[in-house]
Length: 268
Image (cartoon, rainbow, N blue to C red; front, side):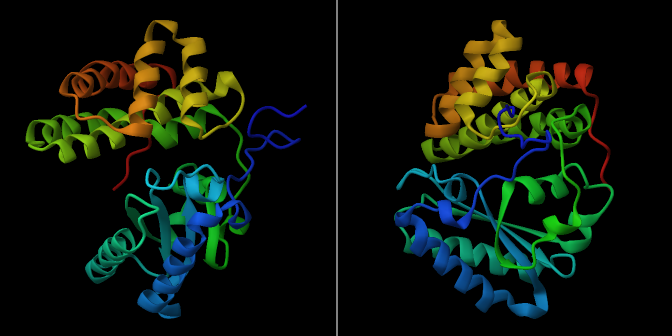
């Protein structure tokens, strides 16, 4: 019997497929693919990928967003980032099924580099669904839920905390706090899960399942992580909840992560 999220050989199974995209989101995906081709063309674009709830088949209309990763032949330039931002705005405005679109830009060299082998490379190989172009997963290894993978994917949480505190101090509207809450909560749940992933012995992107797995090993922090999972799904503007996540759960999690897995390999 295979562990959760693993194949019969113990490797993490790739999430998502175009066949799993809910019908209500199919026009969004089709429009995104066409717009990406028109905007970037073959000269710039190597491949494009979907990730998140839409290709996993769990997206909810009016609640979920559209997540895309574009891999360019060369390092992304400022013009590429401007084009991606324009596409995000256009897709978000055109389709009420999504609450917004997020488009990440990377290069083929970065995805295939030794430095990114257990972070960006793993992300493409295991969490991304091919949409356009040649799939880079064919040039990447298979992955197991190891301590190395845990360290390289989420061993930099402590670096994010000062930025989150600054953003909380600067958040002047409900919308600002809600946007911050979702990003912070998602990262905390993901980090909490990968903290225990090697012991749990499987893989999941489901927020509730991730929170529950964490709670098995850290019962004293179980309720805080449950709140984080709820905020990751529904967002909040409650300052007290945000402060709990950023000033209490976050610092503890960063410290525990370093103690268990160590710090992510430095970039740059």
